Every structure is written in C-alpha cells, then in structure tokens.
Length: 586
Image (tube, rainbow, N blue to C red; front, side, top):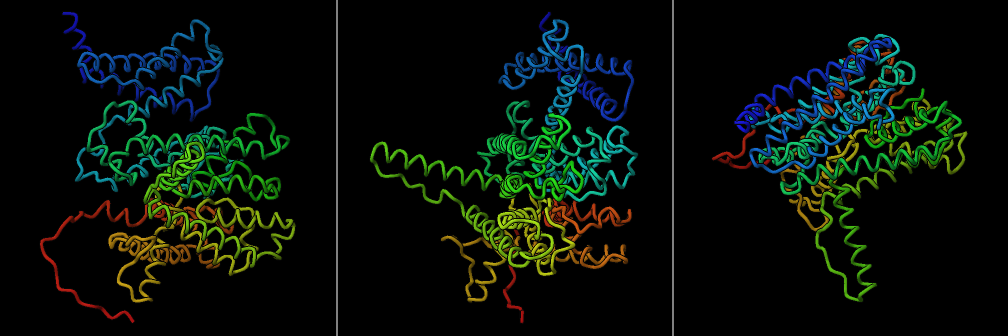
C-alpha cells in the first residue's frame, strides 16, 4: 500500500509539475534579484525565498532519483551529487556551517540558476526531426538567447541609465554572436551585474547554446537517446561514437584554458591600476573569457587601446594566444593534441626500452593540416605586411622595436574576429586597412568561437584556383582528394558572403550618407565576420542602422548557408540525372 502511494506521488506528471513550478519561481526570483534594487527588508525576503526554493529543488531532485530507483533504471551519479550539494546548502544554514549563512544568498541563487539550466536541458527539443533539423535548432538557440539577453539588459539594475530596446538588442546580439561592437561604454553604462550578464552571454554564444545544454543533459538526464546523439553529432561536427565525450572535452578544455588565461592576465597587469583585489580578478576573468571566445569586449574605456594596456606587450602575447586557441576549433585542437601525445609517448618509450616507435598513420586529419597551415600563414603574412606598411607610421612611433612586432602580431591575430585593438584604425594607411579587411573576412576555423568564412573555406578556394589554373580535374591536398561536397560548400559560402556583404554596405551607406564609405565598409565587414573592430562610428549610428547591423551580426555568426539549410527542405537523392554540358566561363 505504501509503495503504491509512493508510486502515485512520484508519477511523472506530479514530479514534472513540481519541477515546472520551481523553475518558474526561480526565474521570477532571478529577475527580481538581478533587475531591481531593494531595501533591507526586501533583501531578507529574497534570501528566505531563495532558501525555500533550494529546499523545493532538493525535493524535486530526490523525487526524480526515487522514481528512477523504483523503476530500477540506471542511477544518475551526477544527479546524486547535485542532490548532496543541495542538502549541504540546506543543512549548512541552520547549523552555521556556511560562512554566508547570515550575510548573503548568492550561493542559493547560483544553485537555482544552474538548476534551471539543467532542467531546461532535460527537455526533448527536436524530437520531430522534420521540424527541428540540426541547422534550425542551431539558429533557434541563438535567437532565443538573444531575446533573453535583450530582456535582461532592459532591467533597471543592468545599467546605470535606462537602455532603449535597440541598445539592449544590439548589445545582446553583439555578445551572443561574439562580435564586440558596442553602442555602450561597457565600463560606464553597465553595472557590475550588467557586465556579468555580458560575460555570460558571450561565453554561451562563443561555445554555442547547444554545447552547454548537451553537456548538462548528458550528465543529469541519464542515458541519451540515439536521436539526441545524432543531433549533437551534426551540431558538433564529430562522429557519433565520440559525440558525448567531445562535448565534455569542449567544456572542460574551455574552462581550464580560460582559468589559466585569467591567471596570466592577472600576473601581467599591475595591481596598482585597480581599486581592489576583486576588481583586478574580475578584469582578468572577463578579458580572458572575452579573448578566448573572440568577443572583443573590455571593461575599460577604449579597451586595449587604453594607455595603460596598449604598451603592455606581455599582456598582448597572452591575449593573442587565447585568441588563436579560441579561433582554431576544438576538433582541430583535440586531434593535434592526440597526435602530439602519441608522438611524445612513443619517443619516451623508445628511450626507455630501445624498441622502435609505433606508427600512427593519418593521425592528423586533412582538416587539421589545412587549418594549422592556413592559420600560421595568415598570422605570419598579416604581421609581416603590417610591419612593412606601418613600421614608421604615427601610431607605432611611440613603441620600441619589440613593441612594434608585438603590436602588429596582436593586430594580425585580433583582426581575425577577436575585436581587440591596440592601434587606431583611422591612422592606418589604406593598404593596411585592406589587409585588415581580408583578415576579417577569412576569420577563424570551423567549430571554433571565431567568425568569418573560415580558414578551410579560404584554403579550399585557393587550392581550387591553382588546380583549375593547372588544368587538374581534382583538388588534392596532403595525399588526399578533397570531396566535391566540400568544394561546393566552400564556393556557396564565399558567394553568399560576398552577396550579403555587398547588400550590407549598400544599405548602411544609404542609411548613413554623411559617413564616408570606408568606415561603413569596415563596420559591415567587422559585423559580418563577428570581429568587433571599428573606425569609431558605431556609437553615432542611427537606430535603423543599428537594427540592420544586428541582422548582419546574426547572419555572420550562424552563416548564410546554415540559414538556407535550416529553412529549405533537404533532398537526399534524386532518381534521375541530366546529361552534362560545359558552360563558357571566359
């Protein structure tokens, strides 16, 4: 009898209703806490409500665990751990085991935010593959995140002055699309809460919303279905067997590298320039995450062009390293690191045992070879060209020889979608601006936090040019023939991007006739390639132009080809084939 009663209480509908209730109340609490200032009495009530919701969340989690136990399903170790954390927060308050027991409710609020994110990750989004194909799901995740960010930026506590809908939408889009263009002074017009919101948005946007939801779903939902793994495989561009491990590796690698980068930023900046230790730590964390995600946002006025930072050469190399790693792509990094690990392991084993090294044929994929070679080529040529063109120019006059090399290398790296700048682009020569536009247009690599048409697209187009000029029927690289599908996608990406950029420059130039064409083109290229660099016209643009730049940033982040794939019906095979005929090209 008791077991039947327990089964009734733990029915899926009952647990689900309790879960939805906690989620709604937690979201309401977060909006009140984040968006509005309150007095002491209100703060105490919010603290009590937070504590009560943690208790409710613990009961919901316990109910889910008991339901799994009664059905004799596989236990979720991560969810057990999450329940124990909730139990610690609940018991620690009356026993005085926690230092925040009587001072602040932020641990409960952090717990509830993660709880809500976990519960949303459980949702079976995309069950109907016809309606929610991977491309459409990818696009929808960005739209939803931008909408939430826009609403949060409009709350009173997010900014030092009321923000309009256009300002909030532009800022949220620029953050989620990791662009870096801003119509606000982040250091002056956003509160600390607003800056944290900005950081969260470009962290989520840089890695992709689906990456985060998949990570939590794998841990807290239990065993994932084959359909969900197929969807993650398509989004992450990896194999089916490694979809789960790939998502986990991405999250752990990102957090680890960002933490290491924050430490380097901290030790390469002078503590005297910050009013407190907390400010110094927040600056380091913010800029490390911004650099790795190629976002380009800064909490200081003028960003890296600030007089205290643009002569800090060690900091430039740290930031450039984070930018490069963020722009390589996770699949490329993991593939090359696996090769390096095998290479070192075999050499060590040969020294210890004297046996020959084992061979690992094709351990480094063709994609990895293309990305690494193209990235190095762009960095070196970009740096060398800028040194040649700008060595004696006014903006580099105050730097030493090592400083000029550091500045040009940083500019070469940051121009490929990062957005930070240590030079004034208005003082650069026209050839240097054109080189910067090319670096912007190419951008980073597939599967990375960067934008642009991607290094692989640029490399395949270049290989195709030389193959066609030499009369070869196939495009080959590193002992492999490039598939026809890859060549068609590269061609479609380039054509769509050039058409869209042409339309964008025309529209913005029409909306802002008083601004010269070069700054307009620079702004459009920067928005499309999610770079964030500007010639100083962003804040002076009208609302109509800002809204159009929102569209440019969004299309540039998700890519025009992905948008077409998400809305057009996919044709797998056709039962017929037409006769071939050559077309005159020139």
